[in-house]
Image (cartoon, rainbow, N blue to C red; front, side, top):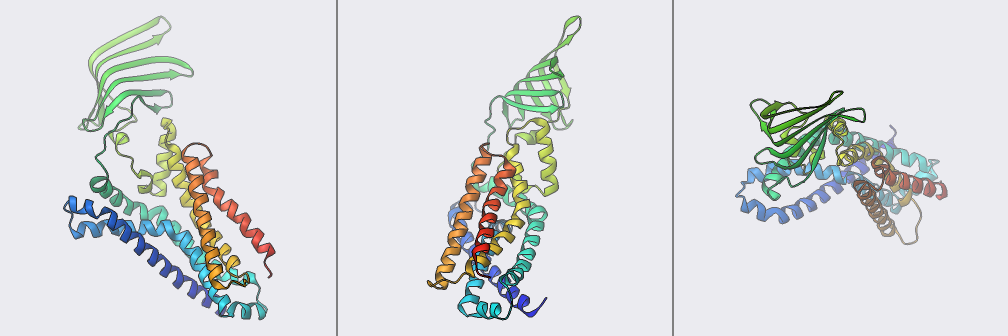
Length: 357
C-alpha cells in the first residue's frame, strides 16, 4: 500500500467512524426520548436500559453503515478537492481510478466487517433487544389469526379455526393426508392441546375418516396424542423475528416455512438477501461518492456535499419502496433487494464515463 492509499484510507475511515458516531448519538437520543415513559412505567433500572442499548446501538450501526460510508466518502473527496489535493494527485500522473481504488480498500474493510456482524454477531444481540421490546415497549401479544393452515409434512395439512397462545389450545382442528391429489384420510378434533411434558399435541373429541378401496373407515375417540411439525412457538409473537436469526438459522427457518407453505416466507427471504447485498451496497455507494465529489463545480464544496446527500436520500427512497413492493408480494424479493444496487450501479457507470479522468 503506497502513501496515497494510506493517506486517503486513514482520512476515510476516521471520517466514517465520526459520522457513524454522530448518527448513532442522534438516533439514541431520539429513541430514548420516545421510550422514556415506557422505561418509567415499567420501573426499569439503569442497568436494564443500558443493557437494552447495548444491543440497540450495533443494530443501528448496521442500518446506517451504507449511507454513512457514502457521506464520509463524499466529504473526504470534497475536502481533497477544496484543498487542491485532488488536483495535485491527478496532475502527478495518477488517474481518478487510483483515487477510487484507495477508497475501495476502505469500503472493502467496512463491507467485510459489516457482513460478519450482520450474519452472526448482531442477530445474537437482537435476541435480547427484541425480547426487551416485546416485554416492555410493545403492547401485550395475542394470537388473533383465524383459519390458520400449516403444511406439516410432504402430504399432510393442518387447519385450525383459531388458536389461544396463552392456553396453547387450538379449536376445530382438521388434519388432512393426501396421496398425490387424492385425499387418503381426514382427522377432525374439537381441540388440540400442547402437552409440554410429552412434547406432543393432544387431540380432544376426535374423529378420523380413512378413505380405502372398500369405502370409508371411521374411528373416533375422546383423546389422542400425536406428534406434528408444529410447536406453540409457531404461534408466538413474530415481531422482528427475522432479525434474531443468524444466517444459518435464517436459512433453516426459510426451509421449514417453505415446507409448511407459510404465507410470510418472503419477509425472511428479504432479510436474508439484504444481509448478502449490503456489503455490495457499501462498495457501490463509496465508488459513487468518489465520482460525484471529484467532479469540478463552480458552486464549491458545499454543493458537492449537498449533491451527495441528495443521492443518499434517493437511494434510501428506492430501497424503502422496493422493499415495500416485495413485502406486498408485488415483486420478487431477490429482485427487490438488488434493484436499488442495479439502478445506482448503472448511474455510477454513467457518471464515471462522463467524468474527466
